[in-house]
Length: 126
Length: 238
Image (cartoon, rainbow over all chains, first blue to last red; front, side):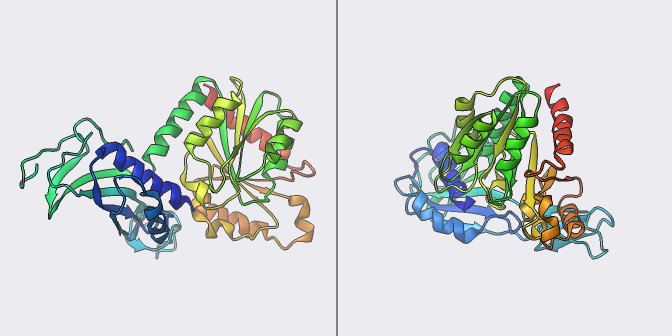
């Protein structure tokens, strides 16, 4: 259940960056090859947001499909496998998409509330 | 950048735009970035002290602690162990009895160690400069894979009483391994474990991983494992 700590990190990151601004929607990217189960994050979300500025917010998760590129023949293809095989028979395949795990955006309740910290907080590295 | 009310935005990496009735704030934050930053801090601490940190991961019951007991007794230098388990100090007690410094991290409901837990464990453990630090992760082939701890090397341990196809069933764990150890090889005559198929599955998940076979019970295969540790330790200290 690593989804619990990942969901906690979502709320921590939002509160750290946006301070007291109340959040009404959180949009996440959970790639299909990321090793994370979106339903488990949804389950954890309502527990983790309690008592924070994110309480009551809707959670929207986009799930990009996996993609890969064969290092042997150069072919690029879509895949649902974490260890994809190329149609040419090669297993020397690089996953190029669908492994992402990110907060994409949030929507705030107050149209004019300036998000505290937005001017001074830099982007997370990595 | 708000076209509705004129309030602005503009912290680097934070972009505010009007979105219907509210404001959309684009964050683009990697969910693992917080843990990765703490892991990098742990790594700096290891490197400054000439410590080699090894993250040991496996399912429960693969023999991690028994292997560590033997390793601690055989290693000619200081070593220390951070023990991760949901409950009890049993493993830290065993390691301490074998002669190494050990601190137990109990994760409670948690299923993996993260970089913050390791940082707290390090504060209590205070490993000697120049030592080898083994971090025995919570027994689990799923969750620990995603969380960097600041380690120099990842070792995944399997035993011959598990299924040989586990590397393909738990690819996230195996595809980041630097070394995969097959433990309990003293039991090979009594179980149906196709070693060649297993090794092929490991290579499929992680072509560059090294593969070694040991018996923590009899000590067979211990020397190559110690040799591997010496080899990864040398570049880490320079």
